[in-house]
Amino acid sequence: MLVFFPLNSFLLLQNGVFGDSQAQAKTEETEGSLQQGSVEGAETQKVELAVAPKKTEIFTSQYQSMRKIGAVDLTLPGAHASVVIDADSGTILHYDKGREQRQIASLTKLMTATLVMEKIKNLDEEVVIDEEAVYVEGTKIGCPRSGYCISQRLKIGEKISVRSLLQAMLMNSANDAAIALSKHIAGSQEAFAEVMNQKAKELGLSDTNFCTPSGLELDGREAECFSSAYDIARIAAYSMRYDTIWKMFKLPNNSTITSVDGKTAHTILNTDLAIDQVPNLLGGKTGFTPLAGYSLLMGATDPTGKHRVVAVLLDDPTRWVDMKAALGWTFASYQWE
Image (cartoon, rainbow, N blue to C red; front, side, top):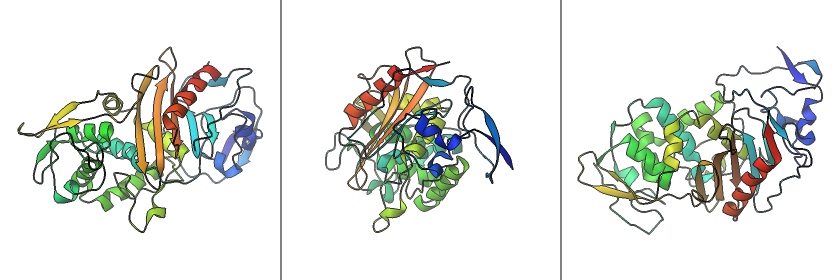
């Protein structure tokens, strides 16, 4: 199969066309991004490569993001891996260890939410809560932190809507909600993980293997559960076609969801501490396990509201400060034409 790539395309990351000049990605690390868009003014040549057919298109854009003259590189010493991409064109704007395979904790839930939107047409469908969901570890509905509860937890046999579970999973990163949704769709967490990994393949995500819908790693098999900053950024960009997901990210603290019969109310907090602090924020998702560390993804637009970006930080103990720096740098360093 003949594919047209820009001349010296394997150097584009270092030259700042698909990323900033600090990116020292290996040749194989660029392959997932080189098919996104074209480069104005670059000569082209025929390169004969065996390229797997692309099953699902993530990016479509009529605009090209351009690095401003004199813009300096972004440095985020707290992040073990970080990426910023143009969510519409797929162009890499910042890249540091973007394809390093790492545990990603609850950032996993963005793929779970995307599959909920694709597999369930009626978000008011009833889900019956089972024992496995109720007794999961970590954050749960009514308990925004392990061991800290602010309202009634889910009960075995309780009926609650897909919409309410989705809200709890996205806002408060509730693990019980993720499990209940996954079993409603696929029958078991294991079967749902297979659906997740099939979707990852369709999206061309080569550095991802999901183990659970919640992002909790499997005991003794932690190394099997991983993704990368670049793959997560692409999942986030793809998920932007579902407005429901991104609207839920921005719902306020102390929101309430109820059981279908209206008898049980649950208070939901929002883990996003930057809702009112980042200009033009679209929303974001936090993640933490002891193995993954503190991670964060966010989407935002430029001041015109026309151009969207996604930033991902993995294993970053200063994630909130670094995220503000990353988004501020992005819109100060790029323009769209």
